[in-house]
Length: 482
Image 1 (cartoon, rainbow, N blue to C red):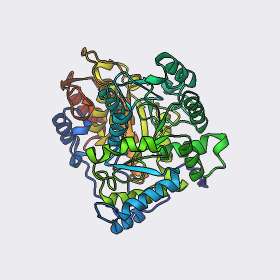
Image 2: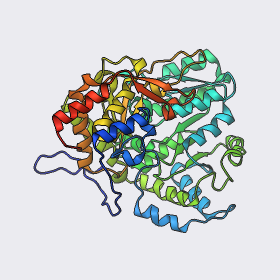
Image 3: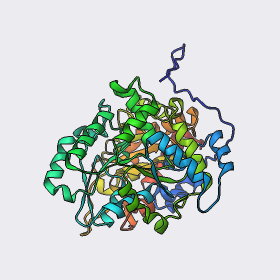
Image 4: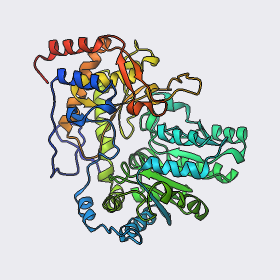
């Protein structure tokens, strides 16, 4: 992977693209932001985009498309059946992943629904490196349970371990022995494990999982939504893969799997979802669910224009200069925050920069949602919208008990090719100021709490008037600055 060095000592990520279309941003005064976050029930998901300066909530569906993707959208074939657009995307999927059977869906969680309905039965178990919120919900709604078996390093938030998204192979064998092969629906591996800081798995670990699946006759499913970042890390961090191209690494990964699914809102930089496999029996079992829940087999709920963009986006993902920008910007942000003493997840992962909210706000108990409070506080002092990834993202059990998350993270996503370096530096500056004034931040409590996926649309109130005190301190230190 090429490296550009600055002669006069700066160590900065260099964008390998130019900007030709821009979208105006608006930074509202802090008093306006206080009213906005209050109206949103201190849930950054409920903020109106007109009130947001930098949207670092997610990288899903907000990545910048390339000129080639935009051009490809003009050749879309709107035929309901037999669409040439479907054929072009199917050919590209087989070319890159080597999978001859392809099912379209409108996004990644729709793929999860189809896979769960097809293979999860009451009492079945899905071992995985770590859960994602919607994945777990689909599995449990179909009567299954999730067994998380990450390696111990996964929860060492500050470390140098390069592949904290790896699965613990000994624990995988123990889970199979405990429940029996007949109870294992499938084994799931998530690229760039989302809820533990976008941490990647290694190709070596994946090969070991494949061996276990072959030994016990189990199906191996890959959630490849964050594959682009994971590919970058494998090439950068895994010694045996440094001389391989991104395309070669992708194919090695794909050849180890039975089913690959992904949100194209992340992988492919367009809006849709993909399931692909070489297992004809599994394909037929899933196929009947696509027209039922999504749309006909040649579009699956997607716009055909988006499908054309996905085909181009997948090809662009094979370009090292395209996939390196996100991880490099994330690494820059993480390292700059580290210099200022802000507790962040290391090594830097994919998806975004992750702040350790329990260390940032040690005075806030987990049942007052420190990561959610940090997200609300950062928006208040900066207009930057991040996302809580902690206890608030979990849900209560059947008895109303609230499980505490393993980690409490504020995720600051880095959509691909969207932000400039000066904007990233602004976010760093405001987060460092907030760290200096962290004792002013207090907790949150639910006032409207949905039973499922509460972090999407639940509302919370502050446990004290800490936000007004934070506004006062902001004005004392930054005067009339926005």
